[in-house]
Image (tube, rainbow, N blue to C red):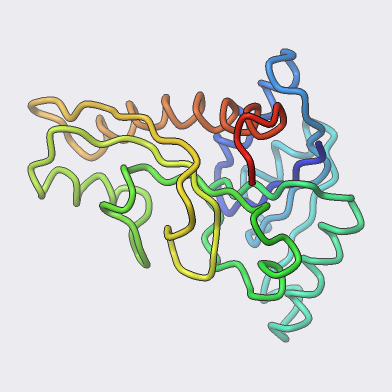
Length: 196
């Protein structure tokens, strides 16, 4: 299965998936990385892994429709089967959603539907979990649709909220689980255990 990544910043989840491929845990082929940030570590990771990589953003394409088409062209040119969002901070366009219906995955650092939606990303999620006095948080892998953090849930894993947790300590524990569950979920899709 050919997998493509869309990432905006560090791409640590992307790296965890690439590592799972390299160590034989995941039978997939990372074919391309697209970032809307020319300075992203995700692009540097792609380069060092020898994966084709592109910076596509409003800076490269001022016309939004041309940008959508450019992203679509790169995905189709690399014969993408599955699109993996790894901290991609842009909403996926309707055109891309239509072509890759049910084939775009995202990971969210909370137990959706709690603590999701527009503006809920990174430390904001963990701060909201702590402010609500939750006893557990976790990770959700879900399909992407036209709404933020809304598509069908494919996998979840719970992470306890500990006394004295800060947004940083909780984020660190959640991220460890993200790095495991994302590759595991892709593996189950490839094996046919999860039907898209």
